[in-house]
Amino acid sequence: MPHKDEPPSPSGFTIQDVTIRGITPQDASALTDVLNMPGVRHGTLRQPFQSVTQTRNFIEALTPADIVIVAEWRGQLLGNAGLHAQRGRRRHAASLGLGIHDDFTGKGIGSLFLKTLLDAADNWHDLKRIELNVFTDNASAIHLYEKFGFEKEGTMRNYAFRDGVYADCYLMARLR
Image: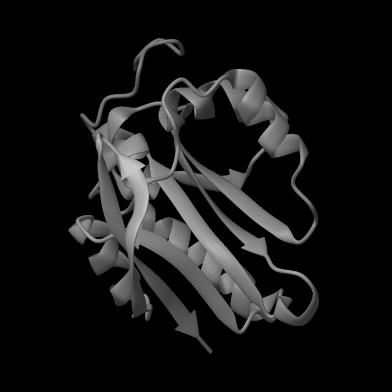
């Protein structure tokens, strides 16, 4: 078993050994390491060099209407996912986001995150609309979202500046 401070390795990984739990302020440092990974940054709106303080502030600013979870394997944080509820006349909707450790993508963690969050959305929060933005070149994420009933609702051109160019994204949603 690797020492607690060593980065996780996919060797011996099984999805059955992954624990999903709510995020805590103590996760700030480990989560910052994941959020600063090149693959996570490339697939999200994160900028390089996010600090532990910024991550901790995000965690501490969560409201009871937000659902944010993390995945752990052998004591190592592998990523996070969240539903962030809208307010007022949009309180039936929430935005979804997730990020997974670069070495653990394609291993079922995204599916585990979505199963957990959509169960909470449907059975505990009565959310009717879950929406997200995904870069048009992120084929694996698009496939994952479609597997869980998300549909493309539109394309936002030049949505974000990433790696020196403007990138498009799809707006996707799942209605129930």
